[in-house]
Image (cartoon, rainbow, N blue to C red; front, side):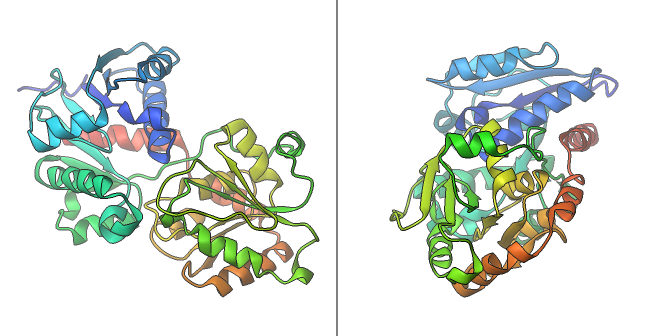
Length: 362
């Protein structure tokens, strides 16, 4: 197939946008900013959903320019079965196809995929058996068929190389925070969620990898003299799987919080505490930094790449170390460092670097 590099027909699987996860945000922001910066190439958006087609249609309707939307009845599970297991049902012809986080289709197009992390291999107990199987199939298909692989950090690239994927096939492209995340008046968010005292904040799906049991234990051991009376630990995020977290004194679970409220919660927090056991990137850390919020996070995987010199790092397996950081961070003035670090990332930059990968692939 002869390709005219002056104008490419680019296909992107956007099925993931319905899940309200980090991968969902990555997919939606990448598409919006690609269409903003690129007026030359044609884009075809593919999505499979059995029940949430309206979310996909609403997303396509608010994009900065008109694109073709191809909706199928292939849910992510069916796409995994058809594409990763059977290698069937290719999408309509494009020059480049950017596969989603779940499945790589059989296609004559140059195939690009983003791999966010290898948690499913490095920490399989923190995933369901189904999730481990799906992502392992995706990784093996990517190793075999992908022309280009986008890794969201140096850490993820290293993990991919260790898995046997050639370094020259991998491009590192960082994610970014949504523009809604900036320093704002926190009064409205605090009032809405009845936060009348000082609080530490943590954000993420409630699952074992987020290390919330150790975080709660670390908070419970804070010496009273180091924080004002009534200080709370506020945990935001939907219930995931794998462990029950018992309610203890001054620990609040808010569940899912919309971004416009979340920016206020970041802005009003004493610190954002994110002792995750492993992250390919760690988008909540960048969101917190963008709001000028001091950050305590883990000293491993991709998290130091996001936090740079603005964050305080801890061993996430060491409860005492997390407690010490929480006790000390109130004495530090990290707002300027946080905002300066956040400015190093933008979705426009992510989109430009991704478009370059598409062009290199052909």
